[in-house]
Amino acid sequence: MVTKRGKLSIILDLLKACFAGASKTNIVYPSNLNFRTVTLHLNLLIDRGVIGIADESVTSYKAIDKGSNRMRNLEGILNELGNADGPRSSR
Image (cartoon, rainbow, N blue to C red; front, side, top):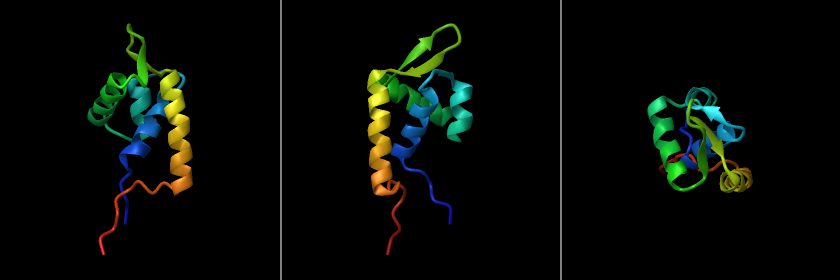
């Protein structure tokens, strides 16, 4: 059975993709998401001040200091929990 990633894992993947600055296309493919989903999450992260637009001429996204800190925190939490933020099985 294939399990879906949780929201925290998706956000971590987006932060990793944005770490050095990336276009939306360069975020979509490594994070294994579609453009619609990436756009929704990028807008959320921008609104929360976690990432910013690095270059407006080509719309490049980059994790800012707050985003870098959140990325490290999320990595630690997900590693400690064994990436347990996926869907729970019902019994």
